[in-house]
Length: 80
Image (cartoon, rainbow, N blue to C red; front, side, top):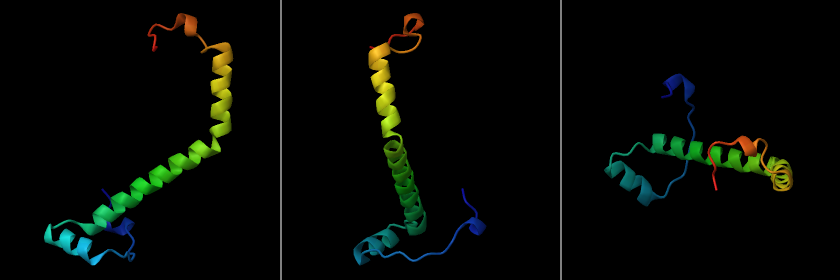
């Protein structure tokens, strides 16, 4: 859990309906917003990594199709 020194203030805009409902339910809008932004950051980083490495992944898959998995003949657990 983050302590107060690690947090920064910011402004966000929510619909009045959502903010009212969150307050009525006692939800911590800041914590929910922080978690949602964290999820979005992780997803964007994963998408960027996938995009940046797409050529290498494709080359690796093509190599495996041609040459089989390295050490496949000594693999104990068969996956398919």
